[in-house]
Image 1 (cartoon, rainbow, N blue to C red):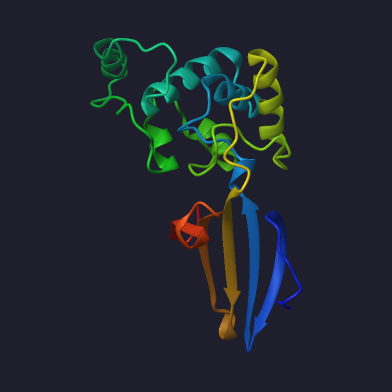
Image 2: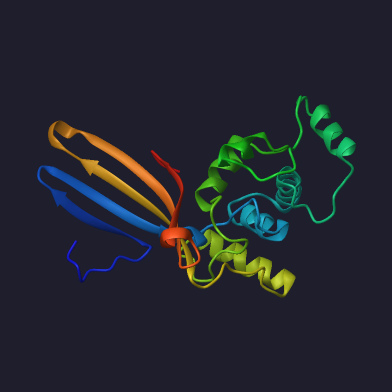
Length: 204
């Protein structure tokens, strides 16, 4: 990358060559997706409908997700919630706190593998309560427009000088060797050193 080049988190693919290794790097804005840990039930419900769930299923799942994360607007007695899970043959209930991984959604009452597979590409655990209005994700854009119409307002964005970016690098080397690494990095003047690494691994 030449010094004058600047990359933006728009999903574009950038290519780097280091000796015999080719590296494809992609930057994506985490605010393009919906964060089930902090998004409103209305926004999650709208996304469920946009990705194929019927209205009744979307409504029940959105409430169940908010009960799981502890963000439900009208809380039911815990004993009642636990009874629902027990009646479904489950020996656990919602923890009432933020999810650590998106895999937890598979444990939410009423969630199916099919629904989760449709939902997951449009989710993140590192974005703001409300996605960016310029999200390139068509399903998120549909859900955001619907939720805003219903609520008549915005749920709030992070400070304007704070950005969270997903950086994915795929390296291809000799003998068809290949490796993928991804990181979630938050940038902002209010952070120590101007950035913070939130997650690192093979992919998210």
